[in-house]
Length: 357
Image (cartoon, rainbow, N blue to C red; front, side, top):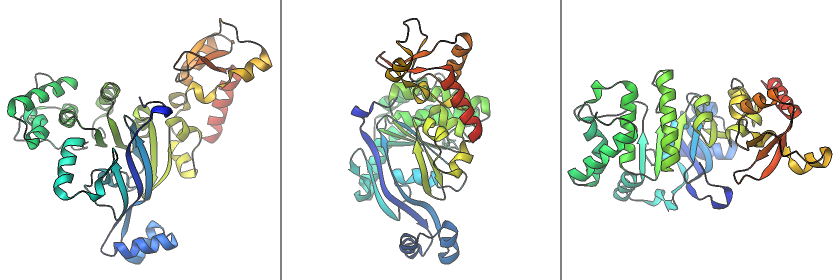
């Protein structure tokens, strides 16, 4: 999980990043900055396409940061700027305090190989190489000797539960297994940053959910900073610490899954999240009332009151409220009582959610 506020350290910073595709991109950029032209107006007037529009954001070290939006929103374009597979038309990009915009080509290639790994939707495995050789490839590029790189590759395969498959070739593996190989290859390089561009979207729903679960387990132990691109809100809510929603190249809202679902920034985001149940997303901390206020009105909360952590979801709280009418004590990660949730609090949250859907 992401460290608490007092200890958070920034891993990735994007400042005023623009990407405009087309021969007249500089003219289009100047004019869109002056006159706030829409994406359609830029296309009609300059025959240029806005891919990313003035994006500024920070991503914490160890965070899983999901970027989502409809097709053409700019999410995949954005992630390719982080490792400069695409050059921005304007703006600054820093990774772990390093200005990658100032790097010459050779230094950039070395930085990518040592500090950043990318997992693609289409697996991108070399068909003529064995699974083990595919996984070892980042270290081969780095010049690591064969024994060391194959040893590291075998450990990565074990992490993704593919021990014993190293001598197979990609066509002998299922789609889900191939995607595991792609993830293992990224992990072999031991990068600071993982960039994942819709890595599970080509898989059937059951395999996709299994891989999401496996990735979440790995992420909790490896503590890698991850930028995860998806068009699936359920996936983003399930694995992301924070979510950025994009539209026409702009980031229209950034927040925790709770923030996005409970407080959409505009009608576009509200429509985007309308289909997801609050029971999956909302945590106790978002619906609790301060314990001091509750006890001032109702007296001291009894020691026998049901107790839940602040990250417990609504489903568990509702189940508890069905069993007992007692107010529930909500505790922080240190075990201290910080809030109270009553049946009334739960009913208000459910009703308000229904009204906004």
